[in-house]
Length: 115
Length: 114
Image (cartoon, rainbow over all chains, first blue to last red; front, side):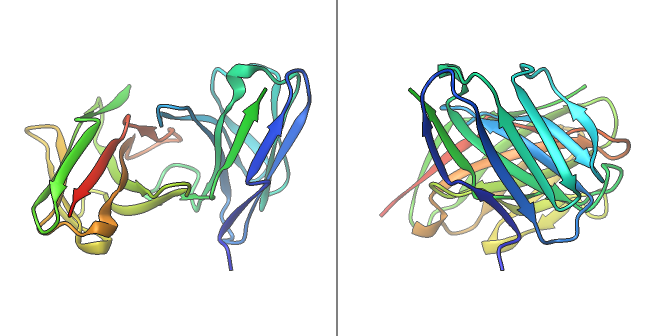
């Protein structure tokens, strides 16, 4: 069983379109995250949710909107896609809210290419 | 505030040689430190973590790291490199309390020379 899964794995779309990436974890974790990895492999957190509540919201354009229907799912919706949004997006989950030493488990990533 | 610096964006070692990947951290409070590995076209996998229990931490695949507070370092080592170790390695830090985010270094690409 895959612990953290993401769909789709690859996403190619044109500028201006709206797209969503879905994430599901079957680890029973309370906290989920979205990261963006750019072409230079730099990883930056975008959002964090704990029990469906937004905890961390980094400086991300408001075209990006996370949605957590339940604590096992965290989806990322992107409006009006731009060339600069091209990256690999990773979903992750962890057991704790941030007070413990629990590590984050990462999904396989979604490679988004905007043309 | 917290940050990590990984010295050397690319490291090449011969198969069977010692692997040393450097990580220095900056944190105003005691940190938790992590090493993750990313194989091509895959997500990140935890190698090991420091949580203040022991300064020498052993991880998976024969890797270990030593927390040195005086040097603010958490370097990753493996005595003998294997071809399968070729990957991108990330050091990460977060405070040991509070609801703080994990901050990653810029990564080190490890190449193994046959």
